[in-house]
Length: 273
Image (cartoon, rainbow, N blue to C red; front, side, top):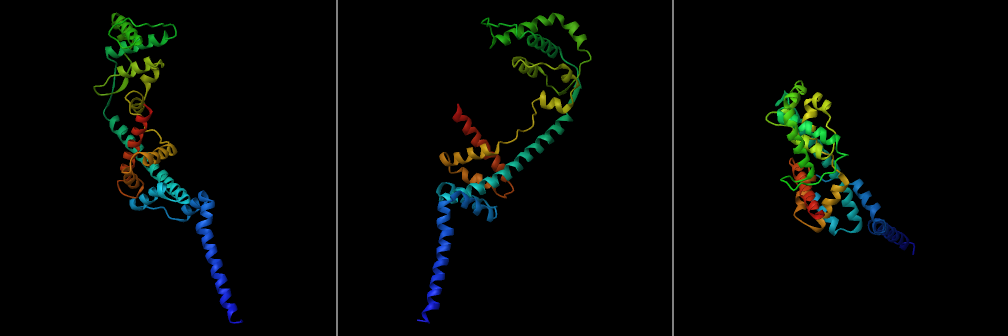
């Protein structure tokens, strides 16, 4: 009997250990999948290869509940790191293009067409609250455009005086480009034409506000990630490989990520039309 007691103790200890391991590995994750998944994500190093990341992406669809939360934490963490790198890259590319275009700009006066556009635009904006425009059934796509052309044609008789008025007006312009579209867009949106700012602006202001070189927008990280995961779930398995490459340490990872974001954004726009 005395010889049996140590053996019994060993059996009980082994059983207790087994029960503890089972509790930690099976029971607790089943009872608290979110907490278990997040804890597991914190104690594991982030994957760096596309193969490892693909395994986590597959867990989102085929894993147990706690593994799904684990994968969400890991993929979310990688995505936020990489999308900020992509955002920084796009900004640097934009900044480089702006600096390059600055060297191609010229400080010049206004052409007759630009003067007529500005004068017609200012008059339309000043009278916008008084106008009750109706289409005359002519060649123009809208009553506003028809009225704009009417005012512009009327101003042609005043060109000699208008040239004197704008004789010292200078803008930063890209070579062989005019501001006609810039004026029209502001007029038809009923936005004020700020002539002082238009005249006194810097080259960078002109590139951004007149010539359409706006800086890249910041990404909505959570929304984009949700859209990508939804796309993977209901649309296309092939994108998993591209997305995994985009989150990896691969030298072209940001190019892959950019393509995935573009594809999913296009799919989302199609769905909303």
